[in-house]
Amino acid sequence: MGYESPMPVQEEVIPFLLGDDNDVIALAQTGTGKTAAFGLPILQKTDVSVCQPQALILCPTRELCLQIADDLNDYSKYVDHLKVLPVYGGSSIESQIKTLKRGVHVVVATPGRLLDLMNRKTIDLSLIKNVILDEADEMLNMGFTDSINAILAEVPASRNMLLFSATMPQGIANITKKYMNNPKEIIIGKKNEGNKNIKHIYYMVQARDKYLALKRIADYYPNIYGIIFCRTRKETQEIADKLIQDGYNADSLHGELSQGQRDYVMQKFRIKNLQLLVATDVAARGLDVDDLTHVINYGLPDEVESYTHRSGRTGRAGKTGISISICHVKEKGKIREIERIINKKFEKGEMPSGKAICEKQLFNLVDQIEKVKVDEEEIAPLMPSIFRKLEWLDKEDIIKRIVSFELNRMIDYYKDADEIQVVDELSGRNKKEAGERGSYRSSSVAEEGFTRFFLNFGKADGMFPNQLIELVNKCVPGKVRIGKIDLRDNFSFFEVEKNEAKRVMDKMNSFEIEGRRISVEPAQGKKGENGGRKNSYDSYKGKRDTNERFDRSERGSEKPWRRSASSRKTRRK
Image (cartoon, rainbow, N blue to C red; front, side, top):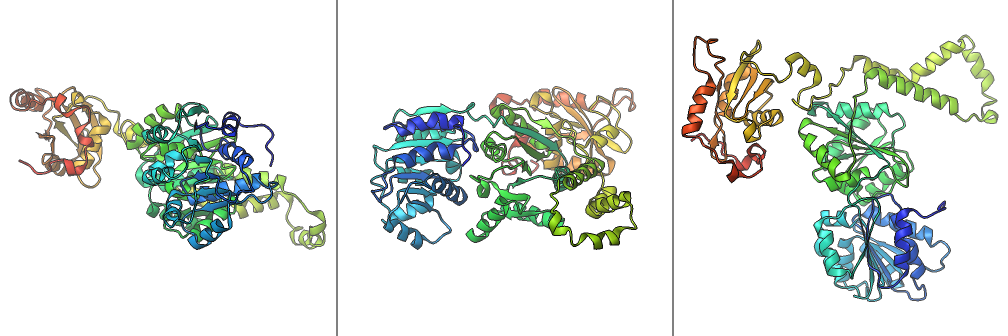
């Protein structure tokens, strides 16, 4: 099968599984050779003369279940009469029961279907010697904790147990305490660490530009072979449909597809008839596809562990891969959190220009022409007619026509396409806007066309530019263009377009944050600039000193503007 030397996880795990009473917890990324690490010793220890299940492998998804079963069948090619049965939902339970009755040695199962067979009394687990939980953290994330507990309670206490996980959440620790006996912990790399062969890149764009950014990224890598992860089934189908309409070789994979449809899509993707697979986290868990060049996150997942699993689809078996995230400014904190946990730095991507994309596509085409295999015998009879047809064109004309024939659509598209501006992470505006509007600087006079407001929250309340923008967006429906922001310790100033000023003031003044009313009023400027009128800060300071003392220790570290809408009081007292 092309295996020449063991990978680190195989080197560590195999000796323990060959022994008795050796429980193992192996923390390793996907794509590190785990299936062979547990598969080879299990097959070696199986007694084919006893036609009852002797090894049980639990995994989170149907796709992974089938892949493990296929690998074990490959490994046992020269072991006569050894039978491996994949047991999963979405296929006929009657045919699985019939196969069990005929006798099998290794059962690879998803928890739900296995529990169903146990409840029907159609599977006997009394001779199980080895139990493997593969992608254990994913099974817990998918809500299989109770099913796993019910299954493990039925297998003999004397069995060996091996738990594979990319991360180590609390649920895994609970299983190890309850069902494992002094387990040996094997860590390949560092706990929760991402694969070192993967390059992590992020692009910060406006939400409205996310799909356009996705297209540019796909165009910039002409030989891309990857998975695009979306958060919901609806979004997955919408993105896949758009890509197909725009001429990309793509399809979707999500939970609303039937098992037959999922198998068909996966088969197309595995044999590279598809370049791009648009999938939800659940559908793509455990996918074992070789040579993926890219994983694209169409927005970051809620859980850091999910990011680890997503990015782990590429850079497998020692190869390199690229994980790209298309984010909006509110996800900046999430990027920093992921960096800390996977112990790798994200690189900020520069959105490729239309010119750069067309150049990349052109050189890829030239590369393909240069490397194409020519079957002289097959084409020999046709060449005289072709030469006659094209003899009026010289070499330069032919090359130009080939290039135009292949790339006209892309050249036309990018000729008229607007450049996608990278968002300024500090302000949440694109760089062009940020340049036009100026940086956040202190000034008492509003820019032309803008109204300057005073706000009774400042840095001491945890208010920074991103939080102020977020607060305005949450209080005021629709799009509001924000100008300069000037932050002080106990209060702030910000600008909005004049035609939105009254609406912003009315809406924000009807909100409270944990009993403290938001106060937004026109800023009066410095003393002397407005006929000697009092600055808003002066009147605010008096109010704050007398009636609006605010004990921050009572609200803890959580910023009040990050609370859900349901927890905010929205009526004016």
